[in-house]
Length: 113
Image (cartoon, rainbow, N blue to C red; front, side, top):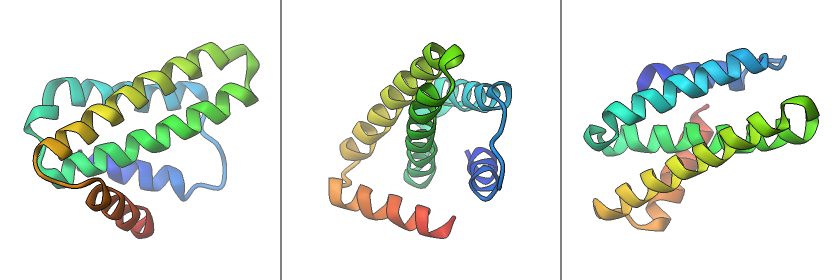
């Protein structure tokens, strides 16, 4: 998960926007990783994955509005990313974290980027 988090930090610090192809490739890699590993992630890795997904949700929603020819594809990315973010939130809650702790941990990740 760390390599995807580092890549997201790189994307967030860019001045330009990446192409749909690169966006979709990154999203696909993250989802494939989660499909294979999400039950075995530590709380820290789960928080990083949740953070990545929340950014993917917001960015894909904005891109769906901005790029009409690709809007359906971006909306699909937003829906799947949101599903995964909710699944990871549930996983953290099940492990004993509170909603407030999750919000605080995500804020700390955001501040670190």
